[in-house]
Amino acid sequence: MSKSLYVGNLPWSATEEGVRGLFAEHGNVLSVKLVSDRETGRARGFGFVEMDDADAPGAVQALNGALYEGRNLRVNEAQPKESRPPRSPRSPRY
Image 1 (cartoon, rainbow, N blue to C red):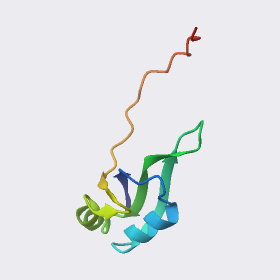
Image 2: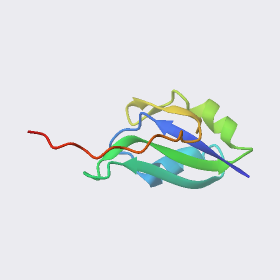
Image 3: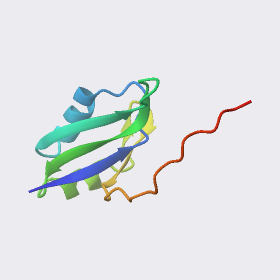
């Protein structure tokens, strides 16, 4: 089994390879997904790391608050995405 970890406060320069390397020091990393803005393609400063169940708690403890490229990371177990009501179409701006 695996756990998904939320990783926040990432620097804009963070790469999936760099984040994978950081978490790999604390266990088996199954996947890394950094979130980017749909319109601009620019990093949004957070992502998700999937790790083995047994390794995830140690990674959270070691990396939550840790300094990474000048930023203090926020790392915790990812929560399921809450369902939101559908977005209404944008009204034109005049």
